[in-house]
Image 1: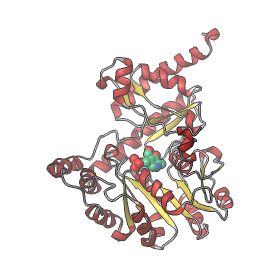
Image 2: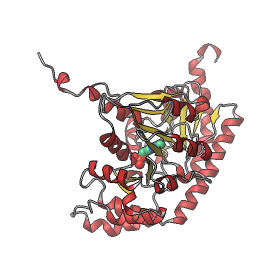
Image 3: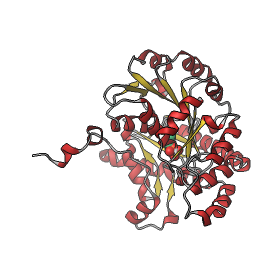
Image 4: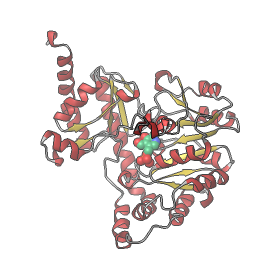
Length: 376
Ligand SMILES: Cc1ncc(COP(=O)(O)O)c(C=O)c1O
Protein backbone atom coordinates (compact mmCIF):
# COMPACT_ATOMS: atom_id res chain seq x y z
CA UNK A 1 0.00 0.00 0.00
CA UNK A 2 1.23 3.50 -0.77
CA UNK A 3 2.12 5.36 2.41
CA UNK A 4 2.14 9.10 2.85
CA UNK A 5 5.94 8.93 3.04
CA UNK A 6 6.05 7.38 -0.43
CA UNK A 7 4.38 10.54 -1.74
CA UNK A 8 7.02 12.83 -0.27
CA UNK A 9 9.90 13.95 -2.51
CA UNK A 10 13.16 12.09 -1.73
CA UNK A 11 14.99 15.36 -0.93
CA UNK A 12 12.47 16.21 1.78
CA UNK A 13 12.35 12.66 3.16
CA UNK A 14 16.08 12.61 3.85
CA UNK A 15 16.28 16.19 5.09
CA UNK A 16 17.78 17.04 8.47
CA UNK A 17 16.15 20.39 9.28
CA UNK A 18 18.29 23.45 10.10
CA UNK A 19 18.76 23.94 13.83
CA UNK A 20 18.37 27.62 14.61
CA UNK A 21 19.59 29.26 17.84
CA UNK A 22 17.14 28.64 20.68
CA UNK A 23 14.58 31.47 20.96
CA UNK A 24 14.53 33.47 24.21
CA UNK A 25 10.79 32.89 24.79
CA UNK A 26 11.21 29.13 24.54
CA UNK A 27 13.99 29.05 27.13
CA UNK A 28 12.03 31.40 29.42
CA UNK A 29 9.11 28.92 29.37
CA UNK A 30 11.33 25.88 29.87
CA UNK A 31 13.39 27.29 32.74
CA UNK A 32 10.68 29.38 34.40
CA UNK A 33 12.77 32.53 33.83
CA UNK A 34 11.63 36.00 32.78
CA UNK A 35 12.70 36.83 29.21
CA UNK A 36 14.74 39.76 30.63
CA UNK A 37 16.85 37.30 32.63
CA UNK A 38 17.94 35.55 29.44
CA UNK A 39 20.79 36.49 27.16
CA UNK A 40 21.07 35.05 23.67
CA UNK A 41 24.53 34.80 22.17
CA UNK A 42 23.53 32.12 19.69
CA UNK A 43 22.57 33.60 16.32
CA UNK A 44 25.23 36.20 15.50
CA UNK A 45 22.72 39.03 15.77
CA UNK A 46 23.67 42.68 16.30
CA UNK A 47 24.31 43.31 20.03
CA UNK A 48 23.28 46.97 19.65
CA UNK A 49 19.89 46.11 18.22
CA UNK A 50 18.48 47.50 14.98
CA UNK A 51 19.66 50.68 13.31
CA UNK A 52 17.65 53.57 14.86
CA UNK A 53 17.13 55.05 11.40
CA UNK A 54 15.59 51.75 10.31
CA UNK A 55 13.25 51.80 13.31
CA UNK A 56 12.05 55.28 12.36
CA UNK A 57 11.47 54.16 8.76
CA UNK A 58 9.45 51.18 9.99
CA UNK A 59 7.24 53.42 12.14
CA UNK A 60 6.66 55.71 9.16
CA UNK A 61 5.83 52.77 6.87
CA UNK A 62 3.46 51.03 9.31
CA UNK A 63 0.23 52.70 8.09
CA UNK A 64 0.90 51.24 4.62
CA UNK A 65 0.98 47.59 5.62
CA UNK A 66 -2.45 46.93 4.13
CA UNK A 67 -0.76 47.41 0.73
CA UNK A 68 1.42 44.90 -1.06
CA UNK A 69 5.06 45.92 -1.15
CA UNK A 70 6.76 47.00 -4.35
CA UNK A 71 7.30 43.54 -5.82
CA UNK A 72 10.41 44.66 -7.69
CA UNK A 73 11.78 46.37 -4.56
CA UNK A 74 12.89 49.14 -6.88
CA UNK A 75 13.74 51.80 -4.27
CA UNK A 76 15.76 49.42 -2.13
CA UNK A 77 17.55 47.94 -5.12
CA UNK A 78 18.42 51.46 -6.29
CA UNK A 79 19.71 52.33 -2.83
CA UNK A 80 21.83 49.16 -2.71
CA UNK A 81 23.16 49.81 -6.22
CA UNK A 82 24.12 53.39 -5.28
CA UNK A 83 25.72 52.19 -2.06
CA UNK A 84 27.97 49.75 -3.95
CA UNK A 85 28.39 51.81 -7.11
CA UNK A 86 26.65 49.15 -9.19
CA UNK A 87 23.56 49.25 -11.37
CA UNK A 88 20.06 48.32 -10.22
CA UNK A 89 20.20 45.37 -12.66
CA UNK A 90 22.97 43.85 -10.51
CA UNK A 91 20.76 43.58 -7.43
CA UNK A 92 18.29 40.86 -6.44
CA UNK A 93 16.46 40.98 -3.11
CA UNK A 94 15.77 37.99 -0.89
CA UNK A 95 13.80 37.08 2.20
CA UNK A 96 17.12 36.97 4.02
CA UNK A 97 20.22 36.01 2.06
CA UNK A 98 19.08 32.43 2.69
CA UNK A 99 16.47 32.94 -0.01
CA UNK A 100 19.16 33.93 -2.51
CA UNK A 101 20.82 30.57 -1.76
CA UNK A 102 17.56 28.87 -2.64
CA UNK A 103 17.11 30.95 -5.81
CA UNK A 104 20.58 29.85 -6.93
CA UNK A 105 19.48 26.24 -6.73
CA UNK A 106 16.25 26.97 -8.60
CA UNK A 107 18.14 28.64 -11.41
CA UNK A 108 21.27 26.53 -11.78
CA UNK A 109 20.78 23.06 -10.31
CA UNK A 110 19.04 20.15 -11.92
CA UNK A 111 18.20 17.63 -9.16
CA UNK A 112 20.19 14.36 -9.36
CA UNK A 113 22.20 15.64 -12.35
CA UNK A 114 24.38 18.39 -10.96
CA UNK A 115 26.42 18.76 -7.81
CA UNK A 116 27.47 21.60 -5.58
CA UNK A 117 30.69 22.25 -3.74
CA UNK A 118 31.46 23.81 -0.38
CA UNK A 119 34.08 23.69 2.36
CA UNK A 120 33.87 21.11 5.19
CA UNK A 121 32.59 23.33 8.02
CA UNK A 122 30.85 25.93 5.89
CA UNK A 123 27.47 27.46 6.74
CA UNK A 124 24.94 24.60 6.98
CA UNK A 125 22.25 25.97 4.68
CA UNK A 126 24.11 25.08 1.44
CA UNK A 127 24.14 21.40 2.39
CA UNK A 128 20.56 21.56 3.54
CA UNK A 129 19.43 23.14 0.30
CA UNK A 130 21.35 20.51 -1.67
CA UNK A 131 19.44 17.82 0.25
CA UNK A 132 16.18 19.59 -0.49
CA UNK A 133 17.04 19.62 -4.20
CA UNK A 134 18.19 15.98 -4.05
CA UNK A 135 21.62 17.06 -5.24
CA UNK A 136 25.01 15.83 -4.00
CA UNK A 137 27.08 18.29 -2.01
CA UNK A 138 30.82 17.69 -2.21
CA UNK A 139 32.83 19.02 0.69
CA UNK A 140 36.52 19.89 0.53
CA UNK A 141 38.69 19.58 3.66
CA UNK A 142 39.34 22.70 5.72
CA UNK A 143 42.74 22.45 7.41
CA UNK A 144 42.71 24.61 10.57
CA UNK A 145 39.09 25.47 9.69
CA UNK A 146 40.19 27.47 6.63
CA UNK A 147 38.85 27.11 3.10
CA UNK A 148 41.38 25.25 0.95
CA UNK A 149 40.73 26.95 -2.37
CA UNK A 150 43.35 24.88 -4.18
CA UNK A 151 41.48 21.73 -3.16
CA UNK A 152 38.19 23.39 -4.12
CA UNK A 153 39.52 24.28 -7.56
CA UNK A 154 40.63 20.69 -8.08
CA UNK A 155 37.26 19.36 -6.91
CA UNK A 156 35.30 21.21 -9.61
CA UNK A 157 33.96 18.59 -11.98
CA UNK A 158 31.93 18.78 -15.19
CA UNK A 159 28.67 18.59 -13.20
CA UNK A 160 29.57 21.17 -10.59
CA UNK A 161 27.13 24.05 -10.97
CA UNK A 162 27.39 25.99 -7.71
CA UNK A 163 30.44 26.59 -5.55
CA UNK A 164 29.76 28.11 -2.13
CA UNK A 165 32.67 30.08 -0.73
CA UNK A 166 32.12 31.73 2.65
CA UNK A 167 34.31 34.50 3.97
CA UNK A 168 34.17 35.11 6.87
CA UNK A 169 32.71 31.67 7.42
CA UNK A 170 30.09 30.74 9.99
CA UNK A 171 30.58 28.91 12.39
CA UNK A 172 34.40 28.87 12.16
CA UNK A 173 34.93 32.64 11.86
CA UNK A 174 37.85 32.20 9.45
CA UNK A 175 38.30 34.39 6.40
CA UNK A 176 40.01 33.82 3.07
CA UNK A 177 43.02 36.04 2.24
CA UNK A 178 42.07 38.45 -0.57
CA UNK A 179 44.79 37.28 -2.96
CA UNK A 180 43.71 33.63 -2.62
CA UNK A 181 40.09 34.52 -3.28
CA UNK A 182 41.00 36.59 -6.33
CA UNK A 183 43.11 33.78 -7.82
CA UNK A 184 40.26 31.32 -7.23
CA UNK A 185 37.55 33.50 -8.80
CA UNK A 186 39.73 34.02 -11.86
CA UNK A 187 40.40 30.27 -12.22
CA UNK A 188 36.84 28.94 -11.92
CA UNK A 189 35.61 27.48 -15.25
CA UNK A 190 32.58 29.12 -16.87
CA UNK A 191 30.24 26.18 -16.30
CA UNK A 192 30.15 26.82 -12.54
CA UNK A 193 28.84 29.80 -10.57
CA UNK A 194 30.58 30.95 -7.41
CA UNK A 195 28.24 32.00 -4.60
CA UNK A 196 30.51 34.13 -2.45
CA UNK A 197 28.72 34.37 0.89
CA UNK A 198 29.64 37.70 2.43
CA UNK A 199 27.14 37.79 5.30
CA UNK A 200 29.93 39.01 7.64
CA UNK A 201 32.01 41.02 5.15
CA UNK A 202 31.18 44.30 6.93
CA UNK A 203 33.23 43.13 9.91
CA UNK A 204 36.43 42.98 7.82
CA UNK A 205 38.88 45.91 7.86
CA UNK A 206 40.15 44.99 4.38
CA UNK A 207 37.30 43.37 2.46
CA UNK A 208 38.10 41.66 -0.85
CA UNK A 209 37.48 43.55 -4.12
CA UNK A 210 34.44 41.36 -4.75
CA UNK A 211 32.31 44.13 -6.28
CA UNK A 212 34.85 44.39 -9.09
CA UNK A 213 34.20 40.72 -9.93
CA UNK A 214 30.52 41.59 -10.40
CA UNK A 215 31.47 44.55 -12.62
CA UNK A 216 33.82 42.35 -14.67
CA UNK A 217 30.96 39.94 -15.40
CA UNK A 218 32.49 36.92 -13.66
CA UNK A 219 30.23 33.96 -12.83
CA UNK A 220 29.81 35.19 -9.30
CA UNK A 221 26.94 36.05 -6.96
CA UNK A 222 27.77 37.93 -3.76
CA UNK A 223 25.42 37.08 -0.89
CA UNK A 224 24.81 39.97 1.46
CA UNK A 225 22.45 40.45 4.39
CA UNK A 226 20.90 43.13 6.59
CA UNK A 227 20.71 40.59 9.45
CA UNK A 228 24.17 41.19 10.93
CA UNK A 229 25.71 44.65 10.70
CA UNK A 230 22.37 46.44 10.24
CA UNK A 231 20.60 44.43 12.95
CA UNK A 232 17.49 43.53 10.92
CA UNK A 233 17.55 39.72 11.24
CA UNK A 234 13.89 39.61 12.31
CA UNK A 235 12.73 41.36 9.15
CA UNK A 236 14.34 38.79 6.84
CA UNK A 237 16.01 40.91 4.22
CA UNK A 238 19.14 40.15 2.22
CA UNK A 239 20.36 40.48 -1.34
CA UNK A 240 22.52 39.10 -4.07
CA UNK A 241 24.90 41.15 -6.23
CA UNK A 242 25.68 39.64 -9.60
CA UNK A 243 26.38 40.52 -13.23
CA UNK A 244 23.08 41.63 -14.80
CA UNK A 245 22.39 38.42 -16.79
CA UNK A 246 22.77 36.24 -13.67
CA UNK A 247 20.73 38.63 -11.52
CA UNK A 248 17.94 38.64 -14.07
CA UNK A 249 17.65 34.81 -13.97
CA UNK A 250 17.54 34.95 -10.18
CA UNK A 251 14.79 37.61 -10.40
CA UNK A 252 12.77 35.27 -12.57
CA UNK A 253 12.89 32.50 -9.95
CA UNK A 254 11.69 34.52 -6.96
CA UNK A 255 8.14 34.89 -5.68
CA UNK A 256 6.37 38.11 -6.73
CA UNK A 257 6.40 39.71 -3.25
CA UNK A 258 9.32 37.93 -1.61
CA UNK A 259 10.44 40.85 0.55
CA UNK A 260 8.00 42.78 2.70
CA UNK A 261 7.14 46.44 2.89
CA UNK A 262 8.60 47.10 6.35
CA UNK A 263 11.82 45.29 5.52
CA UNK A 264 12.31 47.28 2.34
CA UNK A 265 11.75 50.61 4.13
CA UNK A 266 14.00 49.66 7.05
CA UNK A 267 16.80 48.41 4.82
CA UNK A 268 16.91 51.65 2.78
CA UNK A 269 17.33 53.65 5.99
CA UNK A 270 19.82 51.22 7.56
CA UNK A 271 22.12 51.32 4.54
CA UNK A 272 22.98 54.93 5.27
CA UNK A 273 23.19 54.64 9.05
CA UNK A 274 26.96 55.04 9.33
CA UNK A 275 26.76 55.87 13.02
CA UNK A 276 25.12 52.54 13.86
CA UNK A 277 27.52 50.65 11.60
CA UNK A 278 30.59 52.27 13.14
CA UNK A 279 29.37 51.64 16.71
CA UNK A 280 28.59 48.03 15.86
CA UNK A 281 32.01 47.49 14.32
CA UNK A 282 33.73 48.96 17.39
CA UNK A 283 31.69 47.02 19.93
CA UNK A 284 32.00 43.74 18.05
CA UNK A 285 35.76 44.19 17.58
CA UNK A 286 36.33 44.93 21.27
CA UNK A 287 33.97 42.20 22.52
CA UNK A 288 35.48 39.60 20.23
CA UNK A 289 38.99 40.48 21.43
CA UNK A 290 37.88 40.10 25.06
CA UNK A 291 36.28 36.71 24.41
CA UNK A 292 39.36 35.47 22.56
CA UNK A 293 41.74 36.77 25.19
CA UNK A 294 39.78 35.17 27.99
CA UNK A 295 39.46 31.81 26.20
CA UNK A 296 43.22 31.90 25.61
CA UNK A 297 43.94 32.68 29.27
CA UNK A 298 41.79 29.72 30.28
CA UNK A 299 43.91 27.50 28.07
CA UNK A 300 41.03 26.83 25.67
CA UNK A 301 41.51 26.31 21.97
CA UNK A 302 39.58 28.85 19.92
CA UNK A 303 39.58 29.90 16.28
CA UNK A 304 40.59 33.56 15.78
CA UNK A 305 37.48 35.07 14.26
CA UNK A 306 36.75 37.66 11.59
CA UNK A 307 33.00 37.64 12.32
CA UNK A 308 30.82 38.74 15.25
CA UNK A 309 31.23 35.39 17.04
CA UNK A 310 33.95 33.06 18.32
CA UNK A 311 34.14 29.28 18.17
CA UNK A 312 35.74 27.70 21.23
CA UNK A 313 36.60 24.10 22.16
CA UNK A 314 35.00 23.22 25.48
CA UNK A 315 35.08 19.40 25.66
CA UNK A 316 31.40 18.60 25.48
CA UNK A 317 29.57 21.35 23.62
CA UNK A 318 26.09 19.99 24.32
CA UNK A 319 26.77 19.68 28.05
CA UNK A 320 28.07 23.23 28.29
CA UNK A 321 25.16 24.48 26.20
CA UNK A 322 22.67 22.91 28.65
CA UNK A 323 24.59 24.12 31.68
CA UNK A 324 24.57 27.69 30.34
CA UNK A 325 20.87 27.39 29.48
CA UNK A 326 20.06 26.70 33.12
CA UNK A 327 21.78 29.98 33.95
CA UNK A 328 19.79 31.85 31.26
CA UNK A 329 22.53 32.01 28.59
CA UNK A 330 21.99 30.70 25.07
CA UNK A 331 25.07 29.84 23.00
CA UNK A 332 25.28 27.61 19.93
CA UNK A 333 26.35 23.97 20.27
CA UNK A 334 27.96 22.72 17.07
CA UNK A 335 27.30 18.96 17.04
CA UNK A 336 25.27 19.36 13.84
CA UNK A 337 28.45 20.64 12.16
CA UNK A 338 30.39 17.57 13.35
CA UNK A 339 32.03 19.75 16.02
CA UNK A 340 30.62 18.21 19.19
CA UNK A 341 33.48 19.55 21.36
CA UNK A 342 32.91 23.15 20.33
CA UNK A 343 30.39 25.92 20.91
CA UNK A 344 29.98 29.21 19.09
CA UNK A 345 29.49 32.38 21.13
CA UNK A 346 28.15 35.54 19.49
CA UNK A 347 29.62 38.84 20.63
CA UNK A 348 27.14 40.63 22.90
CA UNK A 349 27.11 44.15 24.36
CA UNK A 350 30.12 45.05 26.56
CA UNK A 351 28.01 44.28 29.66
CA UNK A 352 26.89 40.94 28.26
CA UNK A 353 30.47 39.98 27.43
CA UNK A 354 31.57 40.89 30.98
CA UNK A 355 28.77 38.87 32.59
CA UNK A 356 29.29 35.96 30.24
CA UNK A 357 33.00 35.80 31.03
CA UNK A 358 32.16 35.86 34.74
CA UNK A 359 29.84 32.85 34.62
CA UNK A 360 31.60 30.92 31.84
CA UNK A 361 34.47 29.35 33.89
CA UNK A 362 32.03 28.02 36.52
CA UNK A 363 29.76 26.54 33.84
CA UNK A 364 32.76 24.95 32.16
CA UNK A 365 34.03 23.35 35.38
CA UNK A 366 30.54 22.10 36.15
CA UNK A 367 30.32 20.30 32.80
CA UNK A 368 33.83 18.89 33.26
CA UNK A 369 32.98 17.60 36.74
CA UNK A 370 29.82 16.00 35.38
CA UNK A 371 31.89 14.28 32.69
CA UNK A 372 34.49 12.93 35.13
CA UNK A 373 32.55 12.34 38.40
CA UNK A 374 35.24 10.11 39.92
CA UNK A 375 37.80 12.94 39.77
CA UNK A 376 35.45 15.49 41.32
C1 LIG B 1 27.38 32.65 6.40
C2 LIG B 1 25.93 32.99 6.45
N1 LIG B 1 25.27 33.16 5.28
C3 LIG B 1 23.97 33.46 5.26
C4 LIG B 1 23.25 33.62 6.43
C5 LIG B 1 21.79 33.90 6.32
O1 LIG B 1 21.47 35.16 6.73
P1 LIG B 1 20.04 35.79 6.46
O2 LIG B 1 19.18 34.76 5.80
O3 LIG B 1 19.53 36.19 7.80
O4 LIG B 1 20.30 36.95 5.56
C6 LIG B 1 23.88 33.47 7.65
C7 LIG B 1 23.13 33.58 8.91
O5 LIG B 1 23.55 33.35 9.98
C8 LIG B 1 25.25 33.14 7.67
O6 LIG B 1 25.91 32.94 8.81
